[in-house]
Length: 166
Image (tube, rainbow, N blue to C red; front, side, top):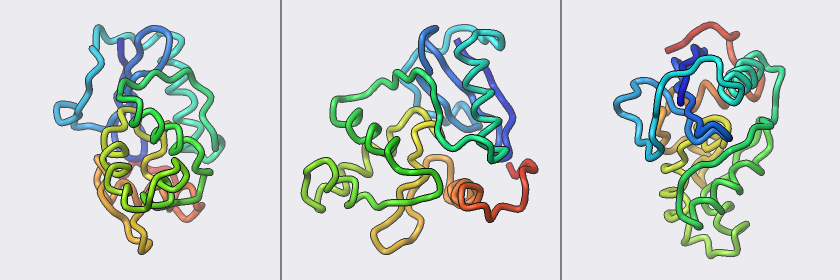
């Protein structure tokens, strides 16, 4: 089941298996890589309603840490990377190499971290936008670099408000 919510960074489709959030991704939805079945739209399911509520609070600057049941589908390695992403504090960034080091891997494993980061099916809630290049530059983001910059600015309190940008 799924729902769509409007946000300052464009429409978000939130997907659930009925127990947990399995995906959240940006429009255009036909371009999203999603492995979980969508099922029917359900704008009233408690998991989806709560996810949308928390996302609205995040965009309003009222929520810094999501508290939702999550069930992203992925390999054991991807799951480890996504768990490391969830440990990046609100408003902060880290590099792919730093995440590799936290996972006990050499900095050379940064590329593998980047690949796992790019497969994150739960945008925003699992904050892959907080990962940047080792030199501090913005690097690939499935939602686009402009959207990534908007999210980082929002978390740093330097956004221009919560008007719709996409």
